[in-house]
Length: 178
Ligand SMILES: [Fe+2]
Image 1 (cartoon, rainbow, N blue to C red):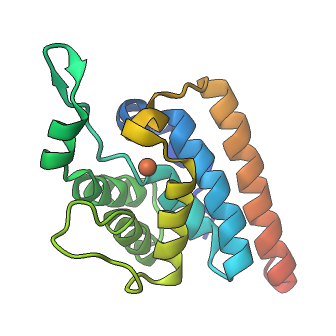
Image 2 (cartoon, rainbow, N blue to C red):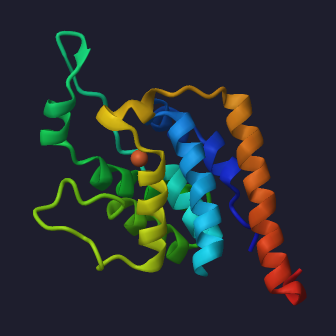
């Protein structure tokens, strides 16, 4: 089966629609961190980078009187739930393997526990941990990381490079399968 690439995922209109809200810069940066951490921890880097790229696609902006209201946003937030559903639908449409789509979706669901009545520390799988840690690494106070900018062309360039690194990783690991 041909691999669904990060570039394929990024270019899809569903991704374009939802990633604008939480910020392309954040999504692409976290995908890069997740790749490095996955290789280090023995986690599938394709799953980690895809989950990281899509982890915030359930976000929405919370404005009051034309201003971002972070506290209100935190109180109502269910972006991980929405993101998990959107990521799954998107990957299935792109022809992704169904088990991969499920793993990515659950990693998106559990990338944060801020909306849950209990913590997830120690309960996450290695993949889920990598995605949560990669996200934390790029986080800034008051959600400012969602407002850093990145051109679409720069995002595509970085994601293409990541795709090449992911493919090289698998080629090296299973040279017979090429
Ligand atoms: Fe995030």
